[in-house]
Each structure stands twice: as structure tokens, then as C-alpha cells.
Length: 243
Image (cartoon, rainbow, N blue to C red; front, side, top):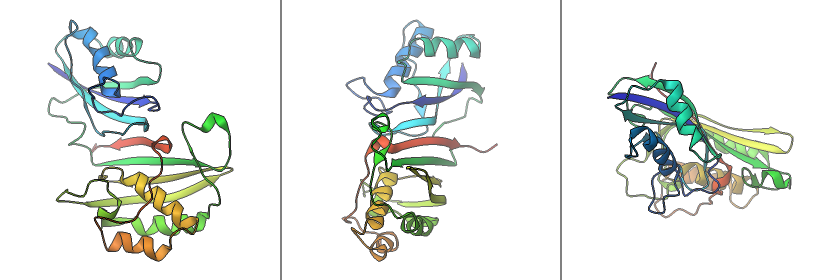
């Protein structure tokens, strides 16, 4: 039995997220169905590094699976992609050690959240259209996130024993009408990036103060008043592993 690591890109617009769902409209379901062709139509389970939500996209999602047949990497990749929806693609595949785990061996992830100031209809599924942005205020908020913090205020579910995350990178960048937020950390809570983005934008638009945003971070609250940005602007860019 060989273990394989795959890197996946997908447009999550029409899917119910990455993790397998009863309606069989998840990215995982689509890949497992395609993989089954290589295993006499028996299901091959894949295990992902991140369970991205409905509508979220990926440029560098990672997963692994086991396969007992002697097939070349090139042929495995070709066979999977031939049977996948055009919105999902395996862009890389490699053999790894049998104890490799895409989720538990990951040491960090980078997400990007994309916004636009334009009304370009071609961007509607992949960017959050916003107005009246102050990039300085956005980056003031982004800077204080760096480091180890309890992100309870920015989590959908607050029953976790550990809400601490270490953020190594957090900044906003503007190019023309397009604005991106980059965040790199060791782990992320459910909806955490979308809550951070939505609340930072609220500060930028003077809906809430910077001091209030700061209090959410340094005085974690289970029932915090926060803003959530839509899923369509969120991209999982990369998952990091030790060399």
C-alpha cells in the first residue's frame, strides 16, 4: 500500500465545502468518486489539511490517500483529473512516507482574502465588493494580530479547549481597485479569517472603533459583536510542512 500526497486547486462557488457531505456535493466527494475508478469502483478515502467551507476556494489545498495498485504518478493524476468537474484539479501528486498525514503534519497555512472596489461582474464569484476603504486602518488592525492570541472572539464555535493561534504574517495590500488580506498562521479556528476580515473592514468604514477591535483580541469574548465577510473572497493559498 502506497501513500500519496496531492495538491488541489478548486473554485468552491458551487460546492458545499471540502469535507464530505450527505448531498455528495463536496470537493472531497468529487475526488473520491474519481479515485474509485482506480480501485475497481471501491471508495478510496482522502484526508485533507483543511476543511474549507462552502464557497471557499483553494490554490494549494493538500490531501493524502492510500492506494494498493502499482500505477505511475503521472497516470494517477491523469485518471483523477479526467473524471473531475472542471472546477477541481489535482495540480501535483507525489509518493510520501506511510506515516505522513496532511492535516496533523501541517505546521502552518496561508490564506488570502480578496476584495475589490470595482463593480466588475467578472469578479463577483471570487471577490468581496466593498467601498470606502482606509488601507491604513486595515493594516493597523492587521498588525496587532501578529503573535500568539486567543481568537475566541473571532470563532464561530467557542467550545474548543484551545482557542490560541500563532499568527506569523498579517497584512493588507492594495493594487489598483483590488485589495487582498494575507494571513499566515499555525492553525485557524472555524470562520476565523472571515470574521477577522469582516471586522477589520468594519473598523476601516468607521462602523466600530480600532479600540473595540483591539478589545476583541485582548479580551476574548464568547458572544462578541463581530462582522463576517462572505466566503467567496477566501482562498487557501498554501499549506506548510517541515522539510
